[in-house]
Amino acid sequence: MSSDTHEAVVQKLIDLYHMLVCHNGFGEMSVDIRILKRGQKEVIIRCGKQYRFVVDTPGQGAEREEWLTNWKHDEEEEQEE
Image 1 (cartoon, rainbow, N blue to C red):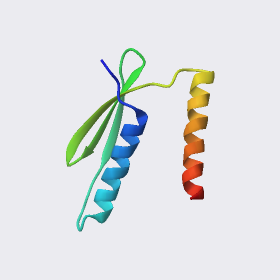
Image 2: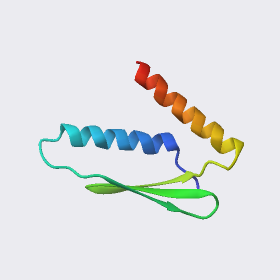
Image 3: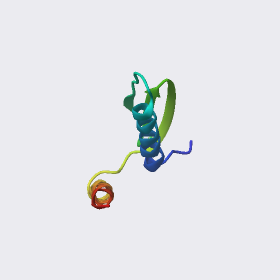
Image 4: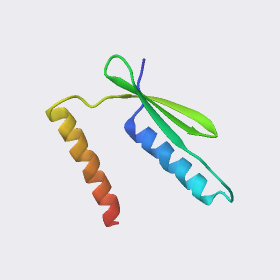
């Protein structure tokens, strides 16, 4: 089974958020994350439809810390712009 990327999940969340904010009425979005086998997680975004992603879980120890550091770094760059 091939996995989706974290960037694809985040981009879908951003797209749906913009759609909800620009919508003239009520909107609702929810996110569920479930643990799967083989070091993966299932991310389900509900916003009118369901969007299902399977992503690899960042490893433990140094690999996980590197992933978190890179993610925070990306957020800081966006805030500076």
